[in-house]
Image (cartoon, rainbow, N blue to C red; front, top):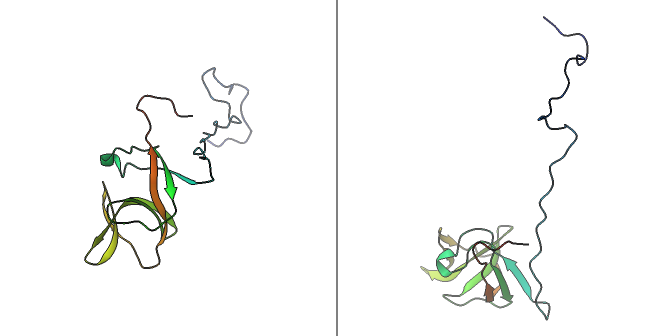
Length: 127
């Protein structure tokens, strides 16, 4: 059987139906706080440095210099910003994290080193 008309008069929305023109509220992310002096701040997204006491949501204040071995480095590689522990393996630069080791290509841009970190507190609201 084929329906030729529009919606039937008996098709009234039930009280628990969602109105079709209501859009879901967008989630607003608060920007990372800007410290005095115009220093760069990077907010960790993934759980890559949890073993170092930096859970997701931690803010890193960036000192713009080239990293040394064992420091938390922020680099731009392949169009993405990556964070990890800077190290050398077989003469090549790598970033180590809880998820493994990533070789850095020669065109990597060193954004800086984490000079100060403010980890989030579990159970506290973010905002």
